[in-house]
Length: 221
Image (cartoon, rainbow, N blue to C red):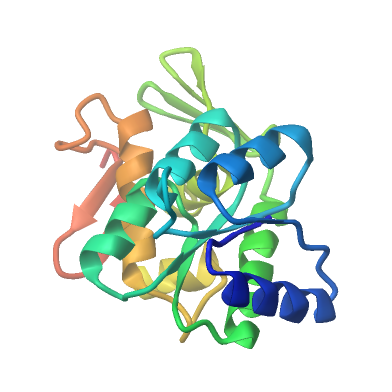
């Protein structure tokens, strides 16, 4: 699903993505995009942030609240505020306009690979957190948590080596499947979302800890 209000951009991206083998549905407003998503099953959403009416940030939040669907956002600027706000709203990745179709297509495929990739089996207990790698579930104090695949993969990657510090670049490569295309803000935003779900006090994390100046590690140590 491509949600983009600029007709020339929308049609150009639709044609380009179609040539790469994607079946593309389009919408020119956030309201239309959400309606079509309720009516039809989609694999991924490419979402422009600057939409008339319901803007892309709110559309992103509503998609996230309603289910687990990967989102690549389009932003007219690479400004930190726009990018970070979009990632915090739940986007998995972003591309700055003007969009190079080959870059967008690569980002789409990378996001889809991450959401579909199998994960190692095994159940582990860390304090009040239970991670079942085989069932792909996480529970806290016996209560199941609902984690989108990207947040789950990040948690599984970090918890596979408790105490080890992972740089943002390492996490981009192992969790996001990105190297030179990556942006460390993807990691920071995902960590922030994950902490709100697994930590008692997100501002004082016990599990996903910051190694200042280096990256992140999994505790409790």
